[in-house]
Length: 461
Image (cartoon, rainbow, N blue to C red; front, top):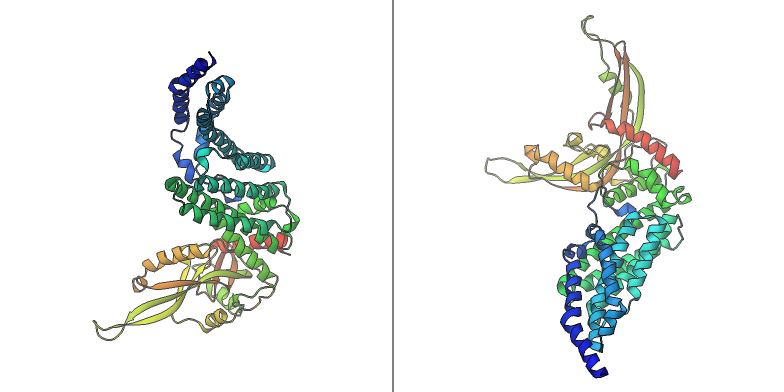
């Protein structure tokens, strides 16, 4: 009787129970493909503002169905019909991806919540996935690489959790950088995996983005160490304080690049670092007098008085231009010319691009001989070298003689700039310029002087 009962249970399992369970498992996985190439976790400061939600967050409504399905797979009545090792292995193989999917949705929701509690939940779910025994069908190379990903992310989450709690150990940056190297190595091995090539390549894209997110965090931590007073506060406070200074809509990489430039200028302001700079302001008074309004014919206009002349150093992006100039006959060969172009780093608009031909000797000397600056205000840049390349390309398109020019952004330099305030009976006005009136200084430049004063006083001195 026991033999008949066992055979009947096996038949019912194979013909009815297992096919229904397999169908239900397939249904809950419908439409989940895009999540494979999306990064599972990113630190708060590595997330793009207004970015799209994680694909798995769109399926959080399935959590109840997933938990119910997982309960069915492990129910004693179902297990009683799995009468042999093959049937038990089939149930195990159906249950493993369901349990993993539950963990993954929990991770995405907790990671988006952030904070100490959120990262704690992320870590516990990752550690649970990393410690889960592999099923018989998961003993291939791809399964091992998946597990390695969960282990690396669990280790990385510990650092994210520490940052959220405001805990920064001396070895934190070194530990994050080591995990970045491991994640990039894992991405390479995933691309070379042949046991599940499509899924492995999608996983490789996700792992690369997870490494990039960790790299942004490492860059912030490195800048935090370079600003003398920043280590007195948690990284989360530093980020909250500096976020309003970053242009709206900036990508995480753009924000980190700006912060690196600001920390360099903070070192320049403390005279700890040399930079290409011109500090000659001898022309300021004469230029202010030249722009002052005067009466004409004793009847027209109004006499203006120079009220103040504020001197500061304007950061500019310097690019070397190479272009061809026609010489001699109409069909003769061109002669390559070289010159320099400067862009106001506080504005980043094509109108502020200045092209020099010939190049002033003072500018050429400053670029060849970096030096330490004196005690003078510096405007805070609002653009990066990548921004400068785009803007300069736009400006050159509007100049027929430079449309085929090749250029290379050499770096940041500081040039003398002034803001002159003029007063008359009709009111006040102010005008700004740089480098003896040869470079147009934007209105933002003066505002960024005040921003730099606050930033350097708050974190760098």
